[in-house]
Length: 138
Image (cartoon, rainbow, N blue to C red; front, side, top):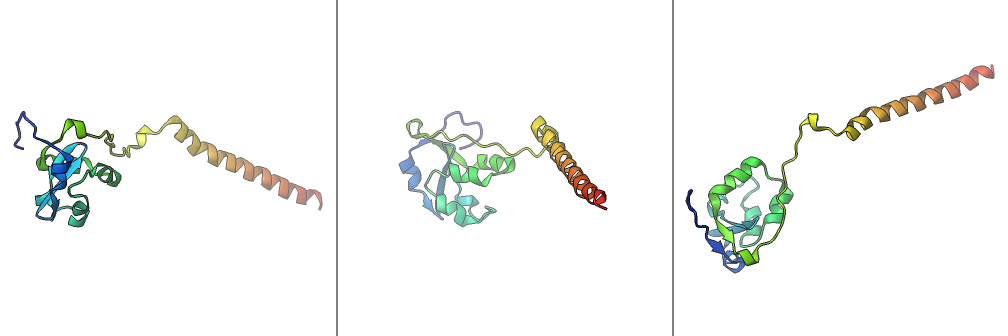
C-alpha cells in the first residue's frame, strides 16, 4: 500500500491464513494486515518467531513481547491492508513503560521513606530493651 492511498484494502482471516510460509508471510496485528516476507531475515527475534504466527492474528504475541515505538513505526512500511470489519477483534494496544522517575505516585514515595523509618524505630526499641535490661541486672 503506497503512502497517500485513501483506499485501504480489506482482507478476510481466511485470505491471511493462506500466506503462512517463508515465501509469503502475512500477519494480523491490531486488525491491520502486514506482509512481513521481506522482514523475515531482519527480525531481531529471528524469522522463526514470525513464521510461527504467519497467516494468523499475532496481536497478543506482539503485545506480550512489548515492542518499542521504533518497532511500531517500522511496521508501517509492511502494512498492506486491514482486516474486514466483520472479522475484527478488540485487543487494546499496550503503551510502552514510562521509566521517568519524576512520575512517582505519592504512595510510592511515602513507602520509600516510611519503611526504613519504621524499621529504624523497631531496631532502636529492641536495642534499648535488650541492652537496657542487661545494664539493670549488673
